[in-house]
Length: 328
Image 1 (tube, rainbow, N blue to C red):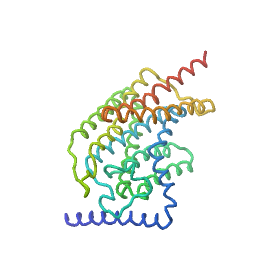
Image 2: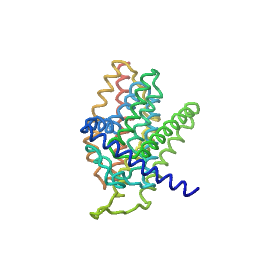
Image 3: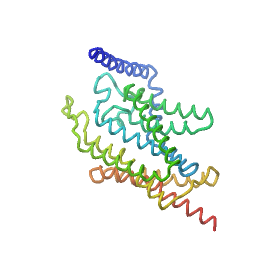
Image 4: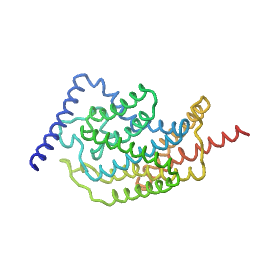
């Protein structure tokens, strides 16, 4: 039985490389015509996608936006735990014939399993699909996370099992968050306990990834195949999200208590204005400074606090002030 399982796993490892080579040959046969689109899909799934739940949180339904935030950050914390525990190398490390497309390799350093892009995008797109009432809109969001996952294979930076497990874990994170929020809505007195547990889970994850041992394998040029320090720094950002979310969630709940503006012309315009500093200041200028501060570890964590402070405290406070001024 053991030999059968070993042989089966070995067969899967061979098949996944053959699948990536098939996609690579297809890319080459069409002159990389689809590569820019797949690169855009992949990049959107880890950058601009976060503006979707922010808009829902500010404008449409505060609770729904918060649930999607929680699902996304739980998914990322799980990704960090598994990725830095399994320490599985990228496809091109396993087989030199794999040549990633375009500039995908620049954002695909470190370990491979499971796919981080997939685990970022799946809870958000999946949450939007789950909460959409229109059947065609549901299909659109479902297709969005499926093509995001596929783009990682198409670009040659992840194996099929990387993205399949990433999708499963992302969907499980979304399902868990939805059920937890359903329970908290029925038992609001338990919400503070859940927030504190999220904070503690994030801190324990940071402690674990910071002090565990990592493989130190070198390539033919004498360079580390994967620098564990870089992976730890990236994970401080990913896991820091759940810590920042929990802290800002508690502050907003106790002191801000804002209400979504509503999906109307005034609300849409106000919140589109709110997106401007979120992008140009926090996501670009401030992030560029913070990610290199204090050896990047604390900088990444503080950057997450800056983002969630703006999303959950600063702009909601502005919206609340504007609402009170209108009443007067």
